[in-house]
Image 1 (cartoon, rainbow, N blue to C red):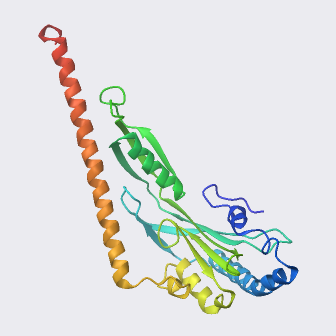
Image 2: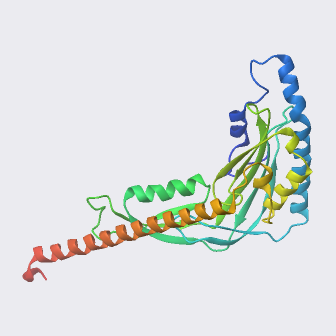
Image 3: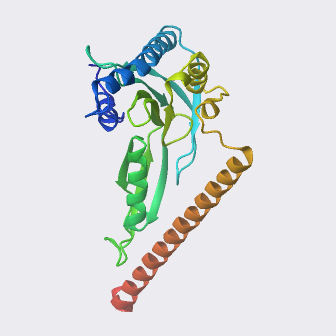
Length: 275
C-alpha cells in the first residue's frame, strides 16, 4: 500500500463510513444487484484515475491554485503536483483515490494577539484542512498571560495545501459517492453519484476541476448553485471574515492597552527614588 501523507484523509476511514461490502444483512439477490450496478462505474473510475495520474506524472502541466485561509492572507499561485494514486489491495474494489499537493515558495505569518479561544480556533481550522503551521511565542508584555487569558503568539502558515478525490460506494443510495477535500476551496464536499451518471462527461469535468479549468462538476452532480445564491454566499463569507478581523484587531488593542497600563502601574509603585 502506498505511503500516505500524514495530512491526507485515510481511504480506509472513508471506506468504513460507506461499508466494506454491499448492504449488510440484505438478501444475496440484493447484494448481487448492488454490485452489478456499481462494478462497471468503479472500473471506469479506476481506469480514469490511472490514466489521469499517468498523464500528470509523466507529462506534467503547469497548474496553479490559490486558497483563502480564514484569518490569514490568501495563499496565491501555489504550484500543483506530487500526484499519487491510492487504490485498494487485491480483492477489494474500493475506495479509489487521487492525492496531490499544492505548494508555494514562501510561508505566510500572522501575529495573533487575542484570547486563547481565538488562538485555538485558528489552530483547529488549519489542522482541519491539513495545512502545516507552527506556533511560536512572539512576546509577553507582562511576563505571563493576562487575567483574561491574553497571549501573544505568531502562527506561521506553510504554503502547502493537500488535495484529494476519493470515489467510494454509497450503500444507502445504491451507487457511488465522490469525496473531495480542498479541491476548489478549503473544506470537504461529498457528491452522490448514481451509477448511470458516472460517464465520460462527468469524468471529463472531474479532470477539468483537477486542472483548475472552468467546469460543470457541481451541475452534473446535482449541486448546481445559481449565480444569485453564489453571490449571496460570497458576500456573507466576506462580511463574516471582516467581522472576525475586527474582533481580532479589538482583542489586540485591548491586550496592548492592558500591557501598557501594567507597566505604568509598576513604575508608579516603585516611586521616584527607584527610577
